[in-house]
Length: 370
Image 1 (cartoon, rainbow, N blue to C red):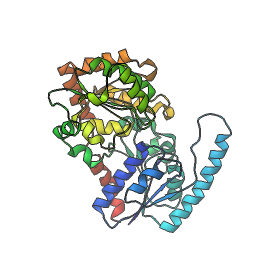
Image 2 (spheres, rainbow, N blue to C red):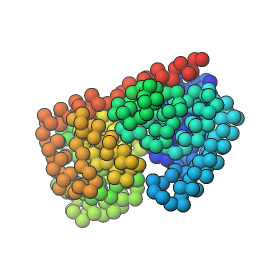
Image 3 (cartoon, rainbow, N blue to C red):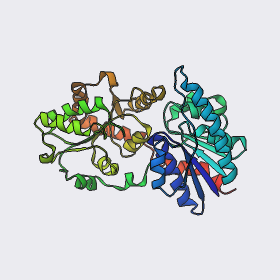
């Protein structure tokens, strides 16, 4: 069997595609793969570190405002469709799986036109433009959030399976004690995990600076600043009298490759509301204080956050309302109130879906054994 994987732009589209590909490989190790992305997206750096061969096409996302960029993007999409058709002609896939991002449009569309089986996976509670368009034309539509189904056409709803979002095996394998040992933390203390996203977030960094200053003696803190804000955060922290090198209970990193260790020992997360991270957070049963990225396409992160807020697994602070005091109030209310914290942890675990990859394979299996 030959399978094309496609999804790009951000890690939220790329990692699910890789997780699905790895699961297919584990089940059918003789499968041949090809990952189709773009030169500009993160997939250009991430996919070559995996077992999947990578090839790029020339395509660009369309901005949601009237500008000359729309015409350029439309022309590149036209070119991308022709490039995708050539790739499909040469590779002859039995199945094409897309996980979102503008690169999916020409690849999945070209496959569907040739009557090659196509599957898309939507990570967010508000489906993206590409997946909303493709959902009417593909064979199967996989969703992370049940709420997303209501935002699809009636034709697309007939093809929907709620699977959840696949997460890496390592996330569930690391124990709490292993996480505490990794950071040299005290098992008797509570641990707060702060994350500003892969590019960092100035607003979250500023608020977490206040948290570090106020809670340094009460909790253990891991904060991922993002590469761009790391040096400034360390300098600002020093101005409050905190020297991270001499403080064993505060860990500040620009990026953390081994996120599984942080999630294993966290009692509360402060984070953006990207679907991939929320799936890992809820799989571990961690409550969250979520600050959706306000410039995400169609504000989809706010929809993701609201889904967990409604389930009792998280609280939300909008970015324009975020301050050190506002964050401190929510963090303190959850962390230092054991019944509240434990109830939210239970709700988070209930919202999580550790069987997502098994459900996805159930949908894929009939296409792999034809």
